[in-house]
Amino acid sequence: MKCFISLVTCLLLCVCMVHSAGAEETIKLGVVTKPGSAQNIVADKFKELVEQRSQGEFKVKIFHSASLGNETEILQQIQLGTIQLAIVTSGPFDSFDPIVRVIDYPFLFKNYRQVDEVLDGPLGSEILTSLEKSGFKGLCFSENGFRNLTNSKRPVTSPSDIGGMKIRVMSSALHKAVWQALGANPTPMPWPIYTELEQGVIDGQENPLWVMEVYKFYEIQKYMTLTRHVYSAHIDVASLNWWNKLDKQNQDLLKEAMCEAARYQRADNRAKNEARLTMLKDKGMQVEENPDISSFRSQVAELKTIDLYKNPQVQKLLLKVLEATR
Ligand code: EAX
Image 1 (cartoon, rainbow, N blue to C red):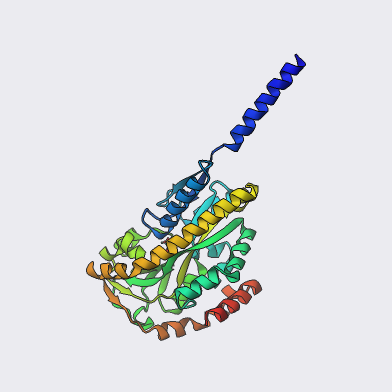
Image 2 (cartoon, rainbow, N blue to C red):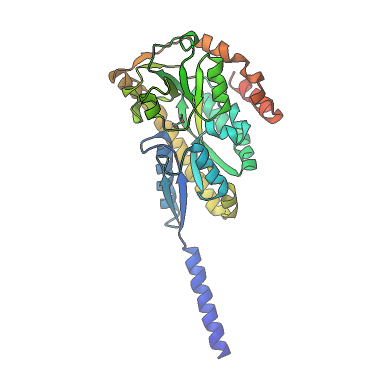
């Protein structure tokens, strides 16, 4: 009898072990944007790679189009662990960790070579590691792209054309300071913002070219200026508590898949920009392609000395990144 019971226990244990080895885990991934957006291209690629490589062990469920709330709320859910992964614009990380202000510094990156060198190198790693203090496991950077100003009021060539314009900015103290320095009336507002633009609650906004296309801003914003004032990264993050419970093999699988998806998306985004610009002009946008960038630059030149950068770790990293992108 004793022997029979231990045999049954043994069998049960084996069944449990086999079951847990093959157990399927659903990973919830949040993005604020709708299908076709930069964030969603990373998310879709990540899902494809993970489901293929984990042979069914992981399923990825993508929550998009603000179904989990805005980007700040998505990050709070990552901290709480109610979702596991998110692809979020660097701007709204500002209220969680001031270190991200370093990469959103205006007119920092001159080209994609500098972007990739900094973000994929030790300086980028320092930012990803710093986020652990706030409960985020930073995996890699994908991209929104270089941001450009659009508005419904008038053509903009220099900051003097912006005077008093109501410009929507992301939930970021730095972005607000940038537009204040440029003479606008910046209004922080979470994504999406089509209705506010349409109803004239705000006159303008700033975002990379894909946004004007995917969100059809050409219908409601007549003027665009290629200011490229901030390079906007996404930070691809996991919930740190959840991440720490995964075994090393799964951590490697997920991190590699996310970074591969990020590299794929950055290349895809960059390759499409020329056609997007043509398309936006065809749709009737009036585009200022050669604005007075030196005036824009000089108006924001003193921002590195403002309080937002006074934290010693942030100040030190800013100086290093400014040096690396000179
Ligand atoms: O990706 O809020 C913003 O302006 C972001 O760039 C937006 O989520 C589009």
